[in-house]
Image (cartoon, rainbow, N blue to C red; front, side, top):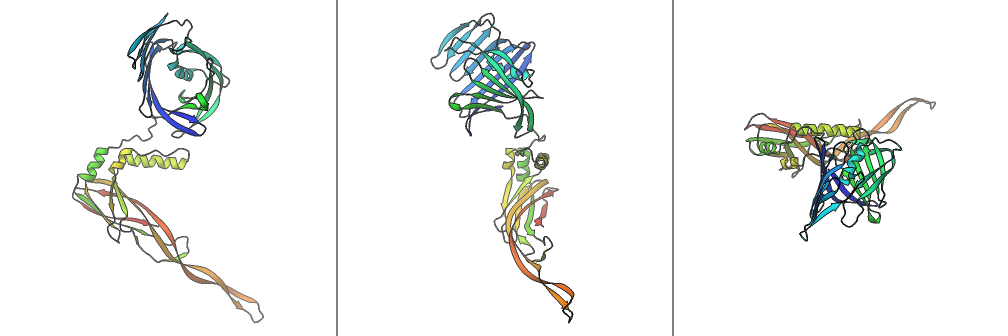
Length: 391
């Protein structure tokens, strides 16, 4: 799927999207392109049939919100145009003697060319417009050079940047074509008023998480069992950096009202966590968003007293992930060298010296982010757990 943006300066406005479905049967190539407006105001479906070897057009069909068009290509071009507003049908008979390709297939033609630095070519395109008699115009590849396309999902791709000029209108196009995959990553087209139409490949085929999330199974584990989890959430902040002599607050319980969450663990969640861990380590790609269905399967409760206690009920056997987050104050005492004592000879010579240490206290704000796994082995079981952050 490609997302269509109108771009002027630094402002990107999403206008819609389109998909391409390409299939081959015998010596015929079939391309179905479906366009949808961002606000649902218009829809357009184009079906092109062409010779798989030469890409010579065989037929073309347009289905839209305002009109329909059907064309058949041969020695003459025949078909019909139907206006959905006036409900009038107009027969179409055209002549186009030169060789050409259907404009719908032109984008795919560019990805099949033997592109290299300095490559040049000209190819004629057919485009039907009832308002003009000029049906065929040359598209001229003005420049091809190396380019690195940066995908937010899959990183850098060595590509070709192809600059194309539409001869009849002077419109400019830029195509970004992957050198290895021959994939069209992006197409830019100049439109009126300094605006560019930019179509971007959304890479829907990029699926780094192989396991699937089962929403129904997860909800059942949270609602259809008889087991309970009884827990205590707290932090125990020990001495840090060798300076603290005494942690004055041994256990810092999660405050009353602190939210605790639970979700059934699954192969999907484990894989999602592992994949994103590797992405964070590589520091090149954005993290993979979690399946939106996971949100509906997160159950919450609150700490109900000043001792960090919480409970979950109606759970089925299985493994669960519990998590919480809360802030607290870390109070501590520490020692520091406040001076030096000296053993002096009557002559004034220093015989020895010793550091003098004093003690002081301090405090700092700390946030506890806690996650732990809990396993329920059988229905009706009561599992006690300490949800703790020990530093």
